Image 1 (cartoon, rainbow, N blue to C red):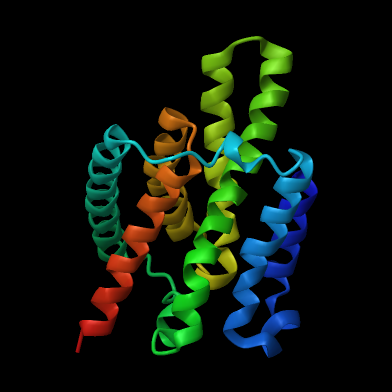
Image 2: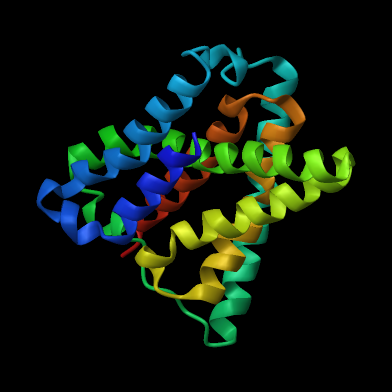
Length: 204
């Protein structure tokens, strides 16, 4: 599982190598983590992919609104402080059908890229500390930092990605921790990014 995340990160960092694939290069986010995770768990995706329950829908709505509000607030604060990142490269490709076909798969892969390191860090720290709560906190912090750094090549601003892509992802992370269902965190991530992209499309 960890090797699949490392390979994905390496390919993202040297994205020029995949530039000839156009929007299809984003499938890297999906294919490698899904295959790596599936191989490690004998393809038993049901361990983390579960049916959405009514209580999950309520949680998704609450966390989505919370993340959107916090993200917009912190984005405004960063802009006021002169900390501005580059635009998401995807926004320049929103008129392509391939972008919208690949986008849902990419986000699922990104959720796996969060969950796999979390499982690894949690296992390691719990092995040494035998303290579940502390291990969850440490594993979550390290995972969100790693997830933020994943976005650094795209946004080119360390502080911005640590705050917006790292810290603000605590809401999707909490969704998974609360339900042990990747579809919950994925739904929040998908709806949030879709909302933002729609705003970009309708903006003058």
